[in-house]
Length: 250
Image (spheres, rainbow, N blue to C red):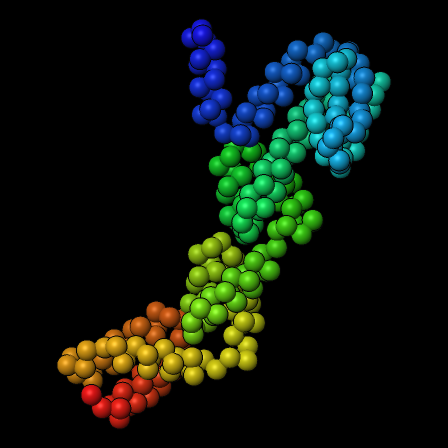
């Protein structure tokens, strides 16, 4: 193997997917003589919804049907800089969209997290925006649904406060507005005071009573605050829990 071939392969391994997509199309497009004829724009065999575009026998692009239609390229058109530029954008957008769909098929993601992933993959902002728009259009990308599902999962595990839910959602890339709305909806109908008391009582029974009631109260308040309860719920729950533990006796 020549040094040049080895370096080219090493570059392909290092280069982000977006960069490789642009380079591959550029190499194909640069080999086409100006004025050459587009000979085929037709469905790709064995790939429903995919369109293949050829110049002579050379495949220059395979695109989703919607992107192919938007490119306004037809058999009989002469190859030009305008067509080259249009297809370059379409090819990268198609690659970014397929990459996004693949990621979402493995696990749900928020718009912001998916945007970061596609940027890291080397796709241009134009391609990223188009991919996100398409994923939202077909229902694969829905921040509100993602937030609701995650919030529901959080409260099913143990009693928790609204602030904790909001913070958890934001840490997963959910916007503040959507996180607040999801937390509000999931906590509607729940008794935050009862939830805080259940946590506080369980915690208090596992604490070392030898530290004294004041220290126990401080620790309970800090614990409940970390779990997202407001000051009133924390104070009431801590007082009731300590009273309950004291009445239970050693």
